[in-house]
Length: 328
Ligand code: SF4
Ligand code: SF4
Ligand code: FES
Image (cartoon, rainbow, N blue to C red):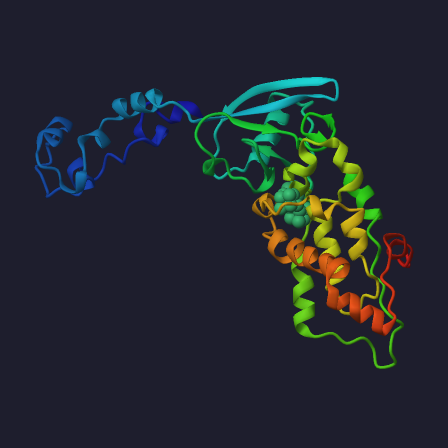
């Protein structure tokens, strides 16, 4: 029933307060004569609490709103496939509190329905939405737009892995490496069950937080620009897996020669880039790679360990034996 609502009343726009009580009362001013006009209020100085006559001019309010530019967000997204591609700008109205993945979804819904991206949980737990945001390996679902510098936001696929399409990469390399890590090999179960110290439980727990987003693999310079290294390099995600198994008090397998000789542990020069990008805040270098390097060096070069093996007639496992000893 539009004819019952005057189109120009303040209520219809919601831009001004109700005409009653008087304007001055509404502005928190001392009581003024009831015949006061807008001009009267505007010219009565000083106003308390920064209140201004502006609030009582519906026409000016509407003009101001029109003059205010709607905030926008621009995503500069890499579009293409294995044969090549380019960056494409998409500009949309900005919404408060959004993460980059929200904007990607709005682009898909409004401007580019064929834009490919991978995601699942939108909660930083599935590790699917990995990409590079302004050049930094990041989860799209955990990167808030309002925390990025002003200007276009560049979103590109992970550079270390082959492109499938747009923001989707082929991360098969990681699953191939995973197959080469000998599995957990506990001794036969004692009658009264396995026992572990709480400290050992907690040490391994940090590594089990990994969500396999592969951002650490993406940032690692050993393979990022050196495809040829992938054949003999496991990468930080799998160094934490090796470390977890090595530190497990019930594991019987010795993987130290394997990780040193076949998995490229020596190529890591502890730059800590992997630790910086890990969304689970796993201290990859300090808590996994460095202790693993120490253990691998002990196994190969420690003279006391060598003497101990001689006296006790213990044999050091070769990489082949370490792999073969896996029950899986
Ligand atoms: S610390 Fe090692 S594993 Fe981590 S990014 Fe640097 S070189 Fe790669
Ligand atoms: S260690 Fe961290 S960065 Fe690497 S795959 Fe796991 S969660 Fe991702
Ligand atoms: S969608 Fe699952 S981690 Fe981003």
